[in-house]
Image (cartoon, rainbow, N blue to C red; front, side, top):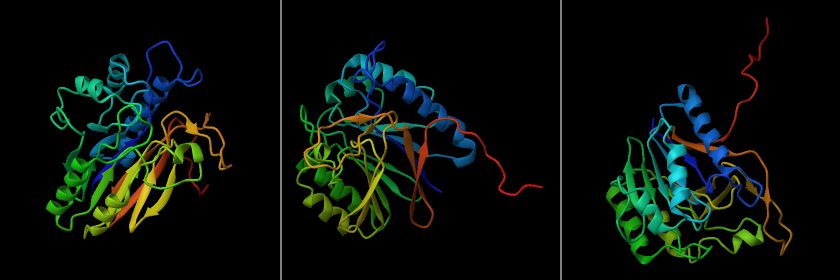
Length: 268
């Protein structure tokens, strides 16, 4: 049974600081890695972890080194796709020993597993908050799905393609998503689309495909659906997603940390 864990929006900053003056994102990522490792005996084996963008807050080499250092204790192989806070050049310098990351152009890749194929897509527009899929990336996706036949696919990118009612974030979503919808809807096998960017767990249909936004590992974008509200963060608990195949995609939202229990429902 193929299982993929999705983490997102880790926003690592240089040592000694807090993101936005409030958030210890490094401690949150370390807690996420600890939670995943600790839970592997009861949810595993897990085939891969994917980080769906915004690994760092400013795209600095120092931030990527810190990200890699924290992730080094993860007991599962992982891959990444870039978000709007990432720097593609610094990211490539940091992942030079990884054969899956391209030396130039969009960071697109494929990881094939027994039950489905995981496809990572680059939706970053350099120095912009919104996302867009280049023609090269759309062709890459169409070709990848064509080669799968009717095998299911889990497609991952940073920017969501639908509105959530949070104006400040909806303006930064994936632009011009009609081609993506057409390509995904044309695939004969089951497809699930997974994203980050919003730091919240949100689910919606995108054409005929289920799309899920993962929560962030440390903080959330404030759920404020008042028109024109300014963007802000709320210190909600971090979490991650587990996507698995059980005669179809099944996804779980898992909070980061240690919690009291388990206790049996039945008592003697």
